[in-house]
Image 1 (tube, rainbow, N blue to C red):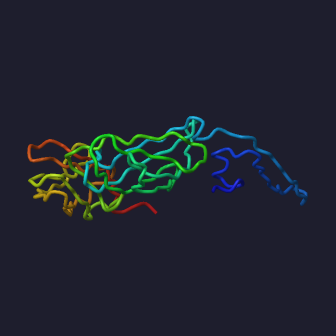
Image 2: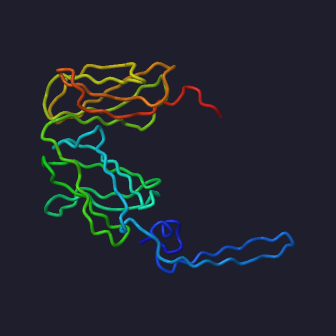
Image 3: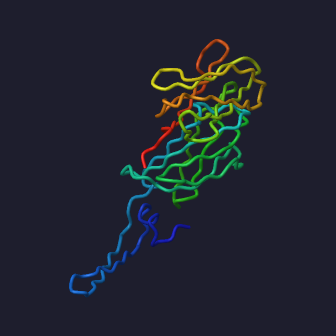
Length: 231
């Protein structure tokens, strides 16, 4: 569990939490400060848990990552831990927030439709189940191998599809295409891709997967760090 005297305890508002501090005075003395915290508001009191499939969609049979963000009713980050479960209650994956109420969890949905939910184990007292977005029967998944890349260096990622066939993946910045690569995909198998942007391109870029008809089917933002960063 979360210790009553931890920073997380303040977020979730444990009853009877006591804060203590010692203040140094100008004359060399010290003053002890104590404050007793009553029960605050928690995620169980009406906070929000937002769920974002990487690339835009959950696709049956394709490994993916689900990003999540937890907020208290006042909009502050909340630390949570929980499970991705199917209709029978079987656990597909477990997760915990990593930073500022955000995190991600990897799993492979097997059934199309609205077959999966998220159940929270921490904080205690949250009984709601959070429905995942609908799982598609067919589609594409794109997964960068890192969240940030150096400008001018290779951007490495994988692309998967439920059907074999041709596709194309492109890296764009401010509506300008920086690099692209044709794909010959095999059904259900991740295809490794390397796209190299110019050294002058930095900022938030977009990776887009297009199907054989040229329609965008999956997208993911990546950050291109400047080649030379300020110290």
